[in-house]
Amino acid sequence: MKKIIYILIGICLGVFGCIHDETTGPHLDISDLSTTFEDSVIYITSTENLRLDAGSFIVQTDSNCPLEYTWSAGKITGWNTSTKFWQLDLMSELSHEQVLDYNFKELGRHLLRLKVVNQYTAYIQYFIVNVSSGFDEGIVLFSKNEAGNGMFSFLNSPKGIDTLLSMNAENFNYVTGEDDPYLNEDICDFIFYSGYTGYPDYGTQILYLLSRKNKQAYSVDEYTLHTIPSDMFKFSKTPECLTLHWHSITSTVYDLFAFTEDGDVISYCTKYQMEMPRMAFDSIHHWDRYSIGGGRMSSYSKNCGDILWLYDDEKSTLYGMYANDMQQASTPSRRINDYIGPKTFEGQEIVNVSYALNQQWGLAAPLNNDVYIITRDKEDPKKTQMHVWFFVPWGENFVKGFRSATYDRELKAGEELSLQKGVRVLPLHERAARFYHNGQKVFHWGKLQHVPLTSTPHGRYVFDIKQVNPNAEIVDINLYIDKKVNKYYVLIATYDPTSASDKKGSVYVVGAEDLSTVVAKYENVAYKPLKIYYKNNQ
Image 1 (cartoon, rainbow, N blue to C red):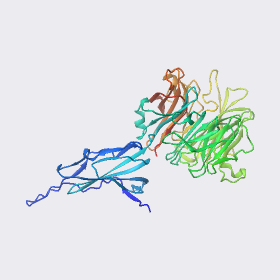
Image 2: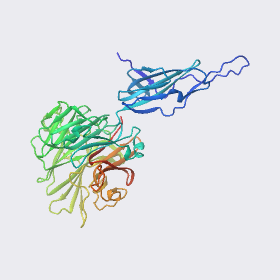
Image 3: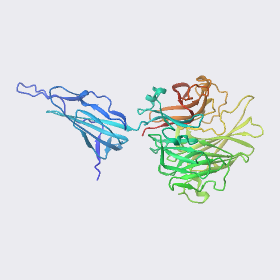
Image 4: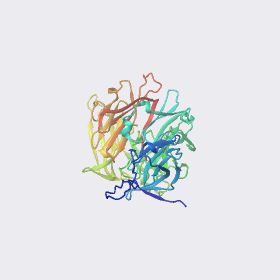
C-alpha cells in the first residue's frame, strides 16, 4: 500500500540559531547550520548523474563540528494549490555521503531532501529535480530536405520562454532519419497538441507524423521525438493532412480526421482504436479543398481541437468538422456537436474561415464565439464580403439563426486580400486577434476588422520577411501563449532556397502585439519546415 507523503513547501525545517546565554554562569555556543544554495530547482536529463556536494553550500559557525548527511528523494505525484503541499508516493534514502552522485532514471519531477546534523542541531533543505530526456519545453519543428528525408529540430528551454529568447541556433538539437527511419517515410503532416491551462485545459502532449506513402499515422514520444512502434495505425485511403479533436470531457479519447487525396475525410477513433464510419456529413465523400481552423474554441473550453473546414467550390458551400464522437446520438438533430454547416453563399467564392472568441465590453464569454467567413464575388472578385455570426455557443451550428452581419468591401485597382485559400488562421483570444501568413508576411487580423491587404507595410500589425531576409519565404507560424504572465509571441518558420547551408530553414520570434520587432532569431536550424510548434512544460 502506497504511503502518501505531504511536504509543506516553503519551510526548511531546522533548529538553528546560536544560543548565547548572557548570564555570568557557564553557557554553551551551538554551531549554527545554514545554506548558501540559492536555486532550489534543478534540471537534469535521465542519462546524466546529479552531483551535489553539500560541503560547497552547507555552512556552520563552528567548522570543527563533524556533520552527518542524509539524502532522500521521492517522485512528485501531485500538488495542492490551496494547502501548498507536495504529494509524493514514496520517500527513499539515497546516500549518507557528503557528495550525492545519483542517477534519476524516471522522468518527471522529484523532491530531493538533504538533512544535515551536527552534535547540536539539524538543518533540512529541499530541491525540486526536473528529470527529462532532453526536451522539456521549447520550440520544435519538423522539416524535410530535397531528398524527402525528415528531421526534428528542437530548442530545449526548461526554464521557459525568457531563457529561450536568450539562446541561439547553436543550442538546437536534432533527431534525423538516421536516429529514426520513420522520419524519412514521405511525411506530409505533423501535428502537436501541447496542453496547459486554457489551451487546451488538458495537461497533455499529443504528437503525430503522417506518412502519405504508407498511409500511416505515427505517434511520437514527446521527450525523445522518436516514433512509437506500438502506436501506429493505417488509413484506408491516402491522407494529406491530420486534425484532432477531443471527445467531450476526456483527454484520453480523441478523433483524428484525415483529408484524403480524393477529397474524402476519414476518421480514426482512439476510443475504439480503429478507423470508424464518419458521422458528420456521412453521405458526402468528396470536397474540393480544405483548410484548418486554429484550435481553441474559447479561452477555457475543454472542447479543443482544430476545425477541418471543407469546401464545395461549385456549389459555394462550406462544411466544418470538429468531432466524430461515437457516443453522440445517431440522429442528425443530436449530432450538432460533431459538425458546422453546411452553409451556401450563392454566387460567392469562399476564401477562408476563422473562429474568434467573442469579446463583449472587453470581457471574454468563454462559451461564445464569433465566426468569420470571407467570400468574394465569382463574377467580380474585387467585391468581397466578410460574414460574421455573433455569440455562437460552443456545440451549436452557426447557421441555425444566430445573429449575423455582412460587411461589404470593394477592392481598388491593385489591391488584393492577404488571406488566401488553405491558410491556417490562429486565434489569440486574449487579444481579440487572429494571425496568419501569405508566404511573405505575417498579418494581425483584429476583431470586426476587414482582412488586411497584401500591400500593408511592415509594422506593428505586419511582419515582412523581406525586412529580415530578402531571399526567404514564410512556411508556417504558430503562437506562444501564457495568460498567467501576459506574454504572447508569434513563432515564424522560414525557408531560404539560396542558402549555402544544408539547413535552409530558420526561426524568428516576434511579439504578438508588435510584429515589427524580432525578439529572437535562430538561423539555419532546419531543412524546409513543415510545421512549427511550442511545447509547454507541464
